[in-house]
Length: 170
Image 1 (cartoon, one colour):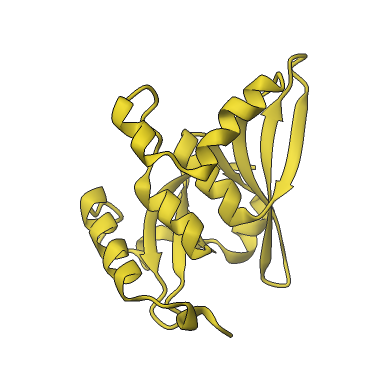
Image 2 (cartoon, helix red, strand yellow):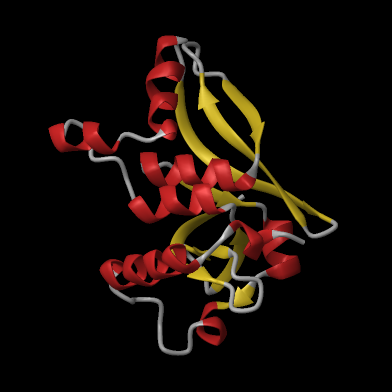
């Protein structure tokens, strides 16, 4: 499993679907993950602010997961994109129980990534996936990956303002 970081949240030009581009922390490859619009919105909002009173006004469905897991005696430690079969990713949320045993829960990749970004969790991608579909980051982003988050958020919000459910019908 390779540790990854979020590089950009973009909109795929042809399909108009949101895409989260993950890049290796200690490497030069990146991988695109197509998202469902609802999870892309969560990722666009960004990390939860913790004890900030204003954050209570913007609580999202994903925000109940950490207290719920904690109440069950475990803690979330990461999200992993585990496999790619016929062009479809699989993912797991990784938890540790009270005895420090690892517990894995299979979830949709977009849900795993939304929770990971919202909670600031580690994100991992299987080496085999990077070997199969990983691309050199400098080829994907010849101008670099450092667009200011505010600019990325503005671009994504513009996309959300113009998108309709019909844009996602196959």
